[in-house]
Image 1 (cartoon, one colour):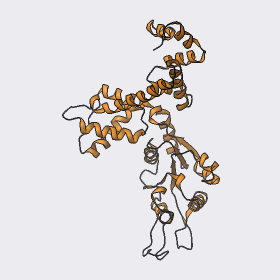
Image 2 (cartoon, helix red, strand yellow):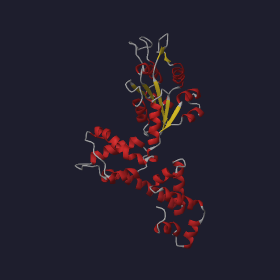
Image 3 (tube, one colour):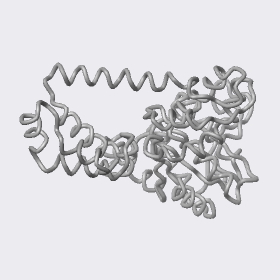
Length: 331
């Protein structure tokens, strides 16, 4: 998180348009808010619009505003989010869902720094920083013909990628206290510290729902904490149970398919490397082992048939890896 935050703070000192990309629940909105709050625009408004939540017609009026009588039902003029964000920032949360017609209008805003409300006969200059977020890489949307290429380049002057929580487990030490206040408020309870054992349970979970799932887990843990002064591991036991259940299913499927233990181990190592885009440290954390052990086991798998030969010659036990760890090898 240190490098990400450092980059975010540097960007906050500029007026540059920023595109924030990350999985659902990974913290894109938090990053956008932090970018605004660390900037000289922090005293100005922060407006957030989610294109997927509105129909194209309503979205256009919401963003650009309208004059009185611009369309049926428009009895009064409406400022629109762009003009309401004057001197501040506008976050387009889920910009990949922006309809094609509004992509063209947004492009003009970025190029000319003006908006034209519905029913108006002239444009209005604006001073607004635009921050866009996307749960999918916009390059893929461009390639699929769903997003304008010229708009992509205007939005992605700087692209910030928010890593999924599973690839930054070390951030839990900082994230848990930071998110505990919101969780306590939702639960109607007082915030509590998290015990070391409970933090270990959190660190072992893969977090497919990212920060959204973490927030729910903290709220649930507070609700179950009772009179304890700290959140204990027992209040988070369901996370470990879910992981064990998934592991049991994988094991049963592998056994039924005749997959050997060595092959299953090698497949896990490769899957971890693929999921973390070749980051050995992150892959090791995903598997709950040290990087040294991860690299040792990965190297063994790449060397070929050693595990299979050991299985054939020693009643199914591959002694090399066991001896290495039992005698002070990598762990």
